[in-house]
Image (cartoon, rainbow, N blue to C red; front, side):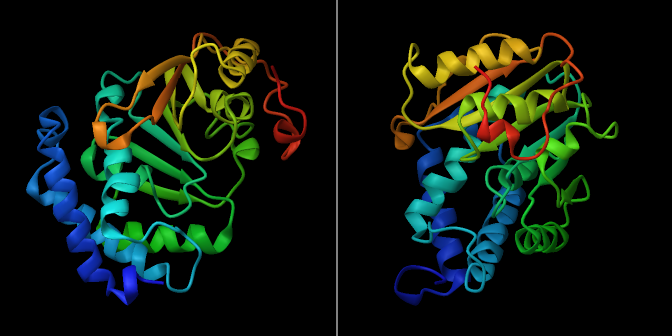
Length: 256
């Protein structure tokens, strides 16, 4: 499905861009970070995503207002939390259709991105998006995070790891923290979450075993995002060499 009632991808993408610009009027601290050229690229990304979604299951969100808020605004709301990174290398886990990484990569061209997607057909679609958008600082890696976490080319090299709808926090900590250098940070997109809730507490115990600090629960910011939250975990020390465990093991037997 390309859009509501068969709307063409280009039309739906433009409508999503108009909705995003309208929403950004209420958050000038975000709007000021996005040039007209960046918004043009974001619109092109949405068109590519919706066109590819006709043949691949990349997103269930296709209605323009929902795309603007649940994909674009939701991704870009993290920008204030990405300043002063320890290194300009960023890794996005479970990139799927490219959200949140591609909108952020458009807004932060100074960062060098690795989009990690283990499903081959999705990784190929992402690579096509990146080429069409002309994003030289973005590469797509068709591999599992557990494998990359043991690869010296990736282990403890990133200043930022992002993840949206990938795993619970205890699992995500084991996937992400081995990729971060000390001083780096994990930003995870989450829905409603209590400061003393079970997932956050288990995530804190897992992070402690992996060289991470206490998870911080952050408001998403824009009111249009409702009760969405970010969880930020700072990397404080090196991850023990036994982590991450072999593929699938973090999800089967979560730490924490």
